[in-house]
Length: 181
Image (cartoon, rainbow, N blue to C red; front, side):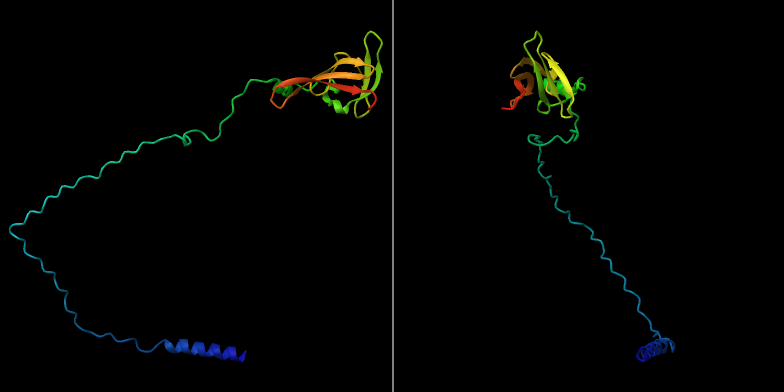
């Protein structure tokens, strides 16, 4: 602290000591006036300057070739027009199926009982929750618009539509069996 106080005192002394005293003296002297520039007398007959004919630079014509370039006036966001409905889109746009069996995949349905040897054969199936449904020929079943086509002692045959890899629709037959093989 003593060293800091000494430095502070020395700094104040130097600052205050530099202030005051006599102001610097100005020297009075005469300054010669600035010399006027001499103007050359005009010549009686001016020599005509050479007339140089300057040709404008050649005009380069540029033609725009839009090939391979995007159209600058085309909007960046374009709404797609509605396309006509295909069979797949009709199936997607169709309202929710009417029966609970039409909401299930065929793999979620289990065949429980068969009644054959009568005029109209019937079968009983269960969903995943164990709820039973009685079906017969023509009953809609499965998400892919399947229909029961046959009820035989081996099981129930369901025909359903599916889309092939080529985009065409085809029909396949799936057999729900009473007993696993």
